[in-house]
Image 1 (cartoon, protein in one colour):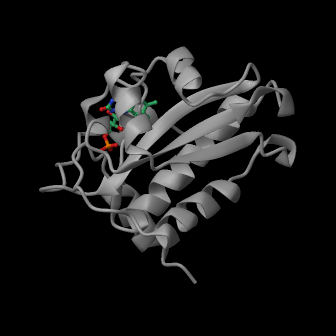
Image 2 (cartoon, rainbow, N blue to C red):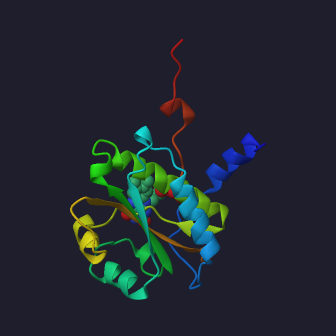
Length: 169
Ligand SMILES: Cc1cc2nc3c(=O)[nH]c(=O)nc-3n(C[C@H](O)[C@H](O)[C@H](O)COP(=O)(O)O)c2cc1C
């Protein structure tokens, strides 16, 4: 059985990581991250997604240079995974489903001592061109992944529980 307290601490300890070591990530670790995406729940179990592992330095550089992705965290990432929604496989839910998959994958990366950063600062159209994707593809995000360089950042503060939660009796 998994200890719930440990799970909560794991969730609290995960941090967005923006600086990465220049160190290759083993294929086994990549596989685990992909598996955690594969087992994400999805509306009607349609699984409207594709996960594209980008190892090519040239494409990583191109995504950065062309400002398809403009978070500095991306610049030195040794690897990235594009999380792509397949629009026609579930037009109403592909975005929600891929968002959930991205969270599963970030958590698995953290369990493997790898850091990630959910990137919203991006030009989806440009990234689609660079990744050679089609009309039916929606690039939710491209997660840079790597071993953590330097100190793990302090946790950004969270709102108080009383601000975000209430009971209806
Ligand atoms: C939808 C979304 C978009 C984000 N976009 C960016 C981004 O473009 N660049 C960046 O550096 N961090 C980005 N972040 C990371 C957040 O800044 C980070 O999750 C937040 O500050 C809380 O920090 P924590 O993840 O360490 O708890 C994004 C996070 C989410 C969930």
